[in-house]
Image (cartoon, rainbow, N blue to C red; front, side, top):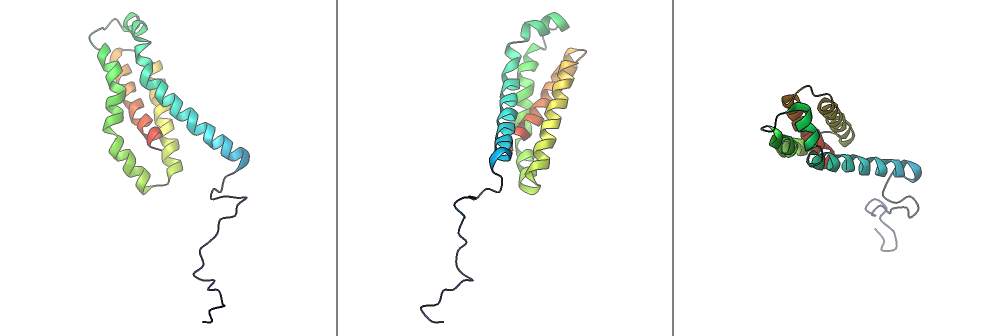
Length: 138
């Protein structure tokens, strides 16, 4: 090959300055970013809300002995699901795993809201921690 010829096959791909490396731009990018921020905000809010609602839980269920499980159930479920969640994100497509994590988190939050007793509330908090880990890892 002549030294004046350009090897087009081995030339690195240049990124268009207008489009950038992302394939999502404008309003779609804004919506995607806001949805991620809201999901992480809701996860963080659920992780800290137990301290604010303790008096209501005691009044509703009259079970002070199990109150500590309300605060520790969420991080316990979250901690136990860190490695499986990371494995799911490494193997499968991000979007369905993230959406499934949000659905699990929301279903568990609904279970907590409709809990008839303290044990159901604790189970709901643990499952919310599992879904929350999927949200946070995503």
